[in-house]
Length: 246
Ligand SMILES: [Mn+2]
Image (tube, rainbow, N blue to C red; front, side, top):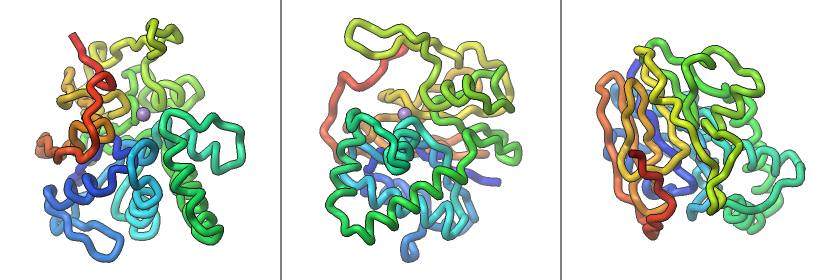
């Protein structure tokens, strides 16, 4: 099984299409396919903040659900959008407001379509993916070794929001622990969630959220080749959104 895991897209449709092209995919109608039958895997956070969240939902739905030639795991932004579409009270902040603004411009027929597409996509998705044929685990914010195989509440929070302590920095960002430093498994753990300027490899883990929506780049990690492929972002660069690891 050959996979191309794609980092946080956050509504950056043009960059996603360029990345597929660079990876050797061909677009046929609303579907990208690879001549070698490679499987794209979306690491979550497909919407919010970027310019084309609704179109990205439609594309991911077509690939994962309609054509069944791609895989998807949810991120924290997906979880929040799902709660919004379910009619739960959620704050329209941290990027959800841009997706809602796009959604509100649609006709009610289009709204019904995109809402049911996204809810279906989210409901069928596993919390994280274990792909032994690719020697990979894909989880939005990563997963610590002891949690692999579990899907309880504690694990769900970790996989969606990361290794947080519950404490925050003075500027409001959560204080994070670094689970990857304590991972000694031989299976790749591929994740996103925390924007970094360059893909960050620690042991057999890789963070491929290279902050496309904050103006850096959109990145894919290919297995079994262990190859990184990126395309530059078209969004304005916002340096303070990036985390620097010692
Ligand atoms: Mn995230």
